[in-house]
Image (cartoon, rainbow over all chains, first blue to last red):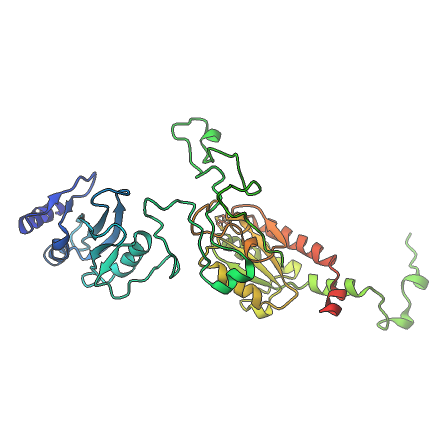
Length: 216
Length: 169
Ligand code: SF4
């Protein structure tokens, strides 16, 4: 079923190309066609449920840098599941993609999350605000250039920051991130652990503000 | 055979009339036996916190069963769970709204140190924003561990100079 839908889609949108996929059929669609293609799948092939909407960051300097992926499921035709991908337009700092809230209202929060994590602007979205991080957070954490530990910045509320003297810090990774050793047969050795434990909370890393406790 | 010492231990003439103690001891005795918690349940640890309130572990035995969802009425804030930076100001705000005297228990690895969440989103220990009295290790700590923490806190409160603090306040 899914494969037939993709064949029909490619007949209707000749610029669409097959996309490597280990399980369900997938297709690359040019930026300009993506809303029309998704509407075609929804209306003609009964893909009535947008399962997921996510993005890929192909790394700094890559072209294209960002790709948005739509996962579609049909609730009326058993086993129909396809993925549609499209490369973002816009600049690396501010990539854009068309919003599909008009097709599936459920896309609303998915697009907000995608915007929050990758900074992709969904054009036509009714209310494109951050959904996980707070408004005013200056970064997009799932971008490749963003370190897992985070970047020092201000707390969401200024007077609390003043009162406590605490800021958002780059988390002390203690030599981490904590990674499991794959292929390790000894389970104790395979436990997730930091690879370098030369510094810790008490021995401040030179490039970081020391952690401090609030006493009163 | 036990002979009751009626002369020294019990005098029915002054019964109900006189109690001699230190003010600190009296105040602390009153405080330790009814600590109403502010359940700051933010993640999985809150499930164990609920278990502590339930019949099996029954924190009522230690006078702390009255979970107050209003900071104005609570004495001890139990931070049970992962505190994100987005939530941190609210935690501090609620702490500020609690009436003194007030205490804080950091329950679990996340509240104590950020736990396994060494990441951009998680406050690395609730002691960065509020003063913590007792830390409980574990992920999550067993209910008994939280009860132990409460008893530790009661021990701590028993040794506080409450009377002089009241007078100087
Ligand atoms: S310490 Fe463990 S159980 Fe408690 S909130 Fe953190 S992850 Fe959950």
